[in-house]
Image (cartoon, rainbow, N blue to C red; front, top):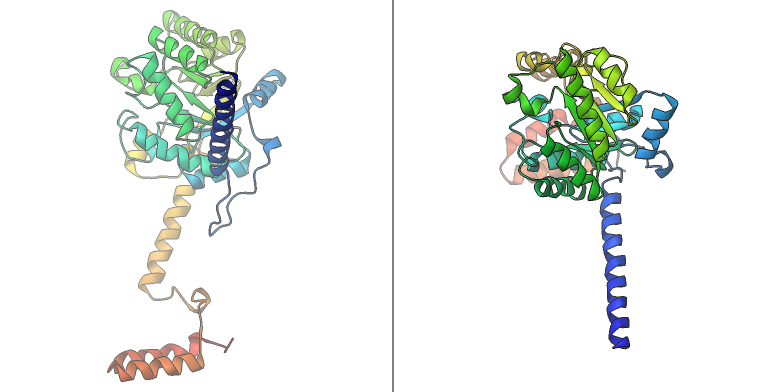
Length: 356
């Protein structure tokens, strides 16, 4: 019996070590800079990676916490390079990436694709993934199962869920008990626009303001490490921030929160399309006019292609030496492709390299 016990213990230990190696490898895979055309981000320094401990230290010191949404590898690299604390893979992708009018249509599978892309590009920020509408409301078990997928398959460090109904508080508590960090979200909760009657600010009367604070407290009690306060009056956000022991992240909630979050495309002024103008909130400061730059660049590209000025010699880097050109033309002539051979002869002078 002792021998059997030892064999089973050894097998379990081997299995545990094996599983640890697999999960560690998978996590590291999501943080290996890719060999891309533009070089990719700098190698990850584990000592500089943002964790919950980092956020708690900033909160304790009164330092502002920065959070920005990201939906793909390039935006994640931008956040990483800028030193943003938290990258939120938000279900706002439904609106700014997929072109819907609300956050409701996006699926868990689509969110996981966005999560994986961001995880490959962001080495420094804490990675938080939104739970998509319809993936956590049925039961606490469904919420835990979805949260587990967001971490295991999406490469996230934490999840965010919306609302403060008892079922949402219970879901947050169960997810935390499952060992997953949770960020709460109160005030305007876009997934609840059916009940709210649209994208409407909250906390504008006594009962609503008290509810915002009470809900934030309940989420803290459930174990959330932070709470997003969206579209509430600044005094209400100040009250919640004062009473909570965890950081508040404001979006359209005034300057008195522990940190702020904005949508990547909004703050960069990335789109001028009427649809995007319709879904861009009025509380957002546009820190750049990237969309205008992109449109201008694309227009110049179109013009240069149409007038045949691009690509020129500078952007035609791959050369063939003179001897190979001669041989190539002879082979074309043998094949009866005289027109092709003539085309080679006409352009070869400017596009032939040396024999090396």
